[in-house]
Image (cartoon, rainbow, N blue to C red; front, side, top):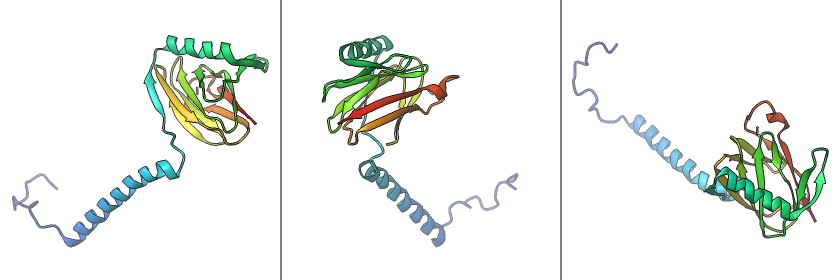
Length: 179
Ligand code: CUA
């Protein structure tokens, strides 16, 4: 018990035991290994995109996304009439996250690259693109930009993976990739 101070006042000034020193060495080297693994995995794992992020006001983002959709909408989908937007290859595409939808649906061409902009108009949502499993946080006031090149045609699903209220489980969107 440490009620009384140790009799030898310099008790901490002992030389390191060899075993303790070895463990400190092992822990230090392991820390370095993990640090460099993070950097290596960024390139080899292909799970973390190199995003760009900018501050943006909700109004400006909404305006740009709506102008984008108005310009390139090719048809409407489902009962809700959500627009399907087909931007020209190489251009900027916008997705709005809000309670409880991903708006609009994008239609992209395989093998072409796009700059996908993402932001929320209310509070935090989680962008999770399935089945390729790209995940990132979507915050109001911040615009995330991902440069992507879809490699496979098909239908991709965006699920919200950040709990955002009563309709969270219905917050599902789509991206089509066409040949
Ligand atoms: Cu949006 Cu959960």
